[in-house]
Image (tube, rainbow, N blue to C red; front, side, top):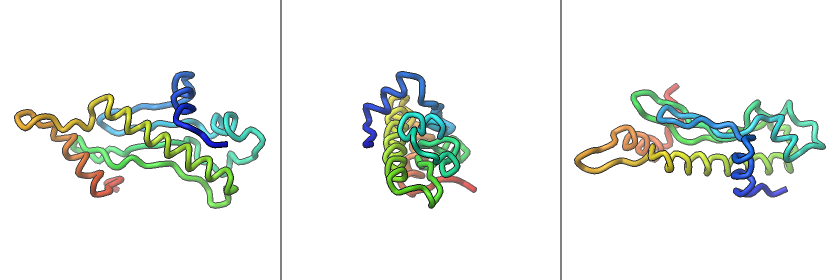
Length: 133
C-alpha cells in the first residue's frame, strides 16, 4: 500500500495523528498500534516497531531546534512493511516542516527585527545537527 500525503491530512482531520510542535521541538505521528490497524492489519509486527511512528525534533537549548528526524524500526521488519514505514515517516516529516512554516517558527524576521531562534535553528539544520547529547 502506497501512503499518500492526502492520507496524512485525512488522519490529521480524523484526530488519529498525534502532534505537538513548538519552538522547543516536538513530534508528529501515530502510535504503532494505530499504524498497524490502518495500514497492516494482517501483520504481527508491533514488536518490530517503535511505540510512536513519525517525525520528531529535539530541542537543543537556547531557543534552537535540531533537524527533523524520522522514527525507525527493527532490522527484522519485513521489507514490504519497512518500505511502508519509510514512506509514512517521510510524509510525517514533510507535514512537520509544513506546520513549522505555518506557525512561522522558521521565519528569520527582518534586518531590523531578527528572529535569532529561527536563524539559529535554520543554521543548525543546515549543519545537520540533530541533538546536543
